[in-house]
Length: 368
Image 1 (tube, helix red, strand yellow):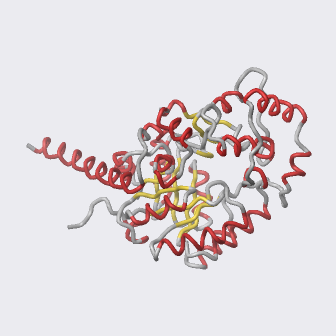
Image 2 (cartoon, one colour):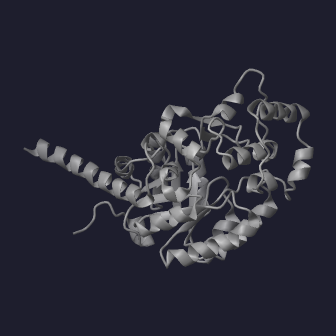
Image 3 (cartoon, helix red, strand yellow):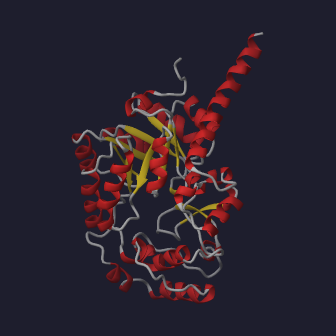
């Protein structure tokens, strides 16, 4: 019997379910693949020297299953990124403000090096990341911020499918002109860097301009019913990110997991305090401090990260229950307990079939 929920893009990729899962965790992406979805590993936060080893591990553990990699490639960043030089150029008033916050919240210095304490985004960093990803066995390459014609051409030349996360029809038309294979219509509801149009308003607009190019729906999706609703608008699947932070395989710090479980959609906010660009995160005392009276405007990327990256690293290293936050979408409503990827995938697929069954039942009632 034909599965009505298996879309043409599922056939192209050789996956069982129209569930596309973004995560920074290798363990999460492996489990999504095992459960029949298409995982996308985010590598925008990884230390450059670690990426080859990470991709080797993914390739080995996937055992031939398809997966993708996501990069963040914003424009208007320096050619070379020396975090010490960027820190030296920070405005004094911002440095003083953050130092007062460190003292107020008693933030200890992080003890381990991380992307946020040693790197700033730069063209040199992006080129290194791109080379490593192109050399991997990933069959898909997604870009979250920034469209780069050379990357799209090089990825396609290697037989890789290109995905572009876009937030407007203008972005979609640019991506289509560059030959992007899959458009990911990411609505305002999404966690991380996002635009200004809600998912349910954005998806039909992108579908209308996409022609034969497949579209995925992203932003605030945490249930199988939402995936079915996206498909009813013409999308060929749902792109989920926030939900996986509830899974054991994500290794979410306990205080952050508790914050996510306690939060509703209204507890996520769009702020520039994280990276310098509009980014939806789950609120914490640190995020609220940037909207308090007397707080300066956040600096542009990459300066904001150079200003506050050590605090972000510290709050995660120390699992600070008051300060810890993370990029998170309005789909936090679906995070209510610790779970596993396999359980989440099973629940999503059951919800999808239940939603489709409900629609069919209504049709049968009307036909009586």
